[in-house]
Amino acid sequence: MKETDQAAFQDLVGQYLIRHRSILDVQSKLVESSARIARALAKAVTSCGCVQIAAERQRFPANLSLAEVREQLSTHLQGEPCERCRETLEDEVGTALFYLAALCHVTGLDLGAILRKERERVAALGLFHLT
Image (cartoon, rainbow, N blue to C red; front, side, top):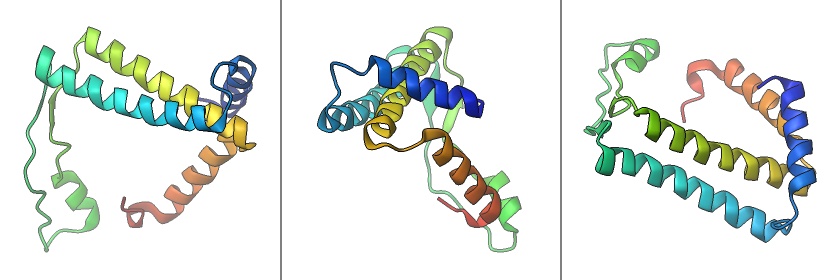
């Protein structure tokens, strides 16, 4: 999203934020939308089967640099979401973005400025921004 797109999106969310205008509503809807993302991914695995999760302990070989270790680590996700699951995930992520923008609007925060600040922080810290 371009910086102007972020501001326009946040403004639009502010205009249409009527039913859930209370900070308590916004906060609970943001948490709910996050849970719906997790549920959509779980259903892609358990109901559809288009993706699988093959999790195991991550190994960090001592003789590799941090950049090389990144290449060795797994996401534990195998396959790609089918069209239907991808659409569901995109819808749920979109809803989460809506409520994230709503939270910023209600609290007077600038979502675009937050994204720029975080991008700069990640870029400055590079591999040391281990999260």
